[in-house]
Structures are given as structure tokens and as C-alpha cells.
Length: 211
Image (cartoon, rainbow, N blue to C red; front, top):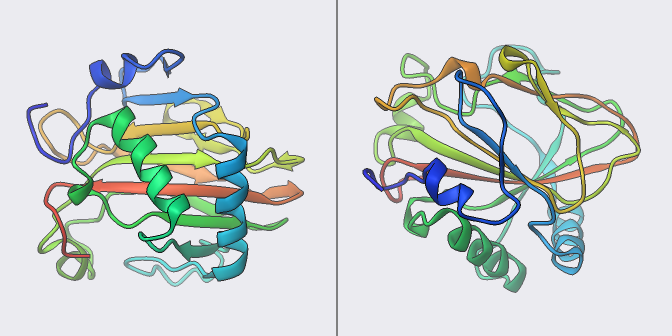
């Protein structure tokens, strides 16, 4: 790996079953059955117990932009440690470069409108979130359950929708090879139509700490 806080296509594709979704606009991968059912159930229980309204950096005035609920998972919990171990075995990124694990819960009608995970260098909250840790590099997201209807993650620029499937991991590089943010990573956590959707999100940064 050339830079800390980075994984690579070669590292990810070394895992049996990993698929790279064909596109020259972004690096996007998926891996089914990444998280075993028992661990997924434990994580869902934690999210359900400790959820709070989700928030936004650089709030845009749209109170319906992100309507899910979020859980900040305690890093000392056994289920959090188990998940972190799975991620490190997969991506090889030093855990010091990873933000704390978050869980999200989407009830029917809830969504996260089209957005990118990287921070806007011109945004009001750039110094608050990035002065120490720097920009986000990779996103690793895990669906914890099957959803009865809706809840897909839509990457409009590349015309790809990924549907929730219990245990499935989806990950992407938020930047181009020169380190600049890649706007093609724009994605939409689409509305859940029926049932509940539980997701784990893990973001990595250019530098350790500072969040």
C-alpha cells in the first residue's frame, strides 16, 4: 500500500468471493456473507438499543435529507471488536486510521438522499472534522439484514443499485488515485418501503485520530 489509511483493489480482490463492479468512474466492490448471522444479530440489537437521530456535516437546511437513526458502537464491545477484526483481515488498513464504527437504522420511509462520504474542503465543518484526521479515504458498509422492500444503495453516476442482503459488504474508494475527492461516489440510501434496514458503516481517513 502506497499510503496509510488506504486499501487497494489487489488487496480486496485477494478475498475469495469479492466482486469488483465494472466501472472506470470509481472503485466499487461487494462481498456476500461477510458478517456471519450471529454477529449481525448482536450488532442489530446494539443499534436498536442505542440509536439516536442521524446528523449531517455541513447541514444544508433540508431536515429530510437524512432521516435514519445512528448508533455509535462502543469500541470495547465484543461485537465491535469482532467486526473490526473482520475488516482488518479484509482491507489491511491500520485500525488507527478508522473512525469509530457506526450503525444505522432505517424505518419505512426513511432515507439518506444522494451524497458523497468525503468532506467538502470548502465546507463550514472542514476544520472541525478534517484538520487532524484529513479526508475520508475508503467506506466499508455492511447490510445486517434482508429488507422486505426498498432500501437499496443507488450509485446514480454509474447506474448501479445495490440491494440489501444480510451479511453483504459494499466498499468503495472515495478518492481518485491522486488523492482528490471523486464525485462519482455520489450515492443514495433509498427509502425503505417495507420492513427495517440495519447497516454498519466504517470510514477510514488519511491520518489517525482527531474525530
